Length: 367
View 1: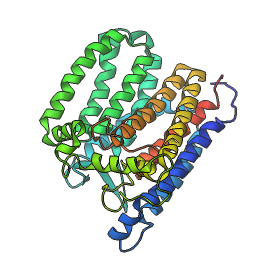
View 2 (view 1 turned 90 degrees about the vertical axis):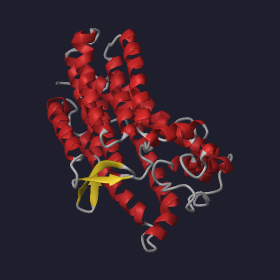
View 3 (view 1 turned 90 degrees about the horizontal axis):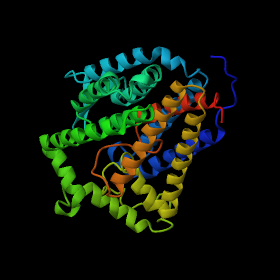
View 4 (view 1 turned 60 degrees about the horizontal axis):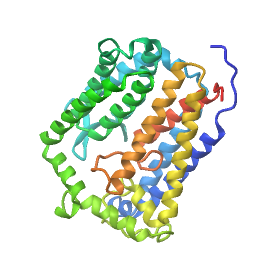
């Protein structure tokens, strides 16, 4: 493709790095007490690892930014197949590592990777390629929509075997956004949506712990020491934060009230320590990042670039909405991390890699 390169989107870079910096600070603030207790006085245990993940992720982001984005079109099928293989491997007893009831990790030395995280980006690349090459078929249910959603649901099924409903929901949600933007009919989505709701209800009813999560979401005080514990403790962190917060490092809920606050519930600690203003600033940074991402998608020189950018932005947006919704008691607990801010190697590295792809597309943007 002979398109003139321009500098990458500077505002997108600044928004990403600012969120990452806030995340590192808040991971230390949220985890220091827990780490000191659990790891022989090493209060820096989690933040040291997060700095390592961030360093690898930023390096990958800037390296990928220099790779022409249509390279991912060439390798999309291979990446998808590798990720499918890893989703199968992680289910093998003795190979996959179990954490919090989900067999979702594969150990690599002292660290571990979560194949379902990388499946999200591989699926985005594959769908961007397939839909850009077969856009004329998308309005047709059997010819266009069924084959596309079939691949998505196969990946979702493997993820649910772990089980990991949160990651599976992000994968499906992101895929639906790309397919809809590519030209799928709304009527088809309405019908599939009804089927999906029925399937979701069956998934919930098939596992008692999911029923408890729904129940605790509707009324966490029904079981305040069990299924409603996390939501209640999260709200008890957000409430006292007020307008300006208790001050950086002054959280009370991180003292063994809110379980592992450096992961899924880190936004509660942000709201407690930095208040409404701090929480709003973080949300505005995400809004800025998403706006620049949509701008990149609209200005991409081809359909593949547009769909790829839309998929990346949709993935981040869905995770942000679900995570903050859970923390504020609007959604059931799902185990979704907050991009750039929550502790976690696979999630952070994957998100920064995705931003690298987005930055490369921005170098060819016509806007």
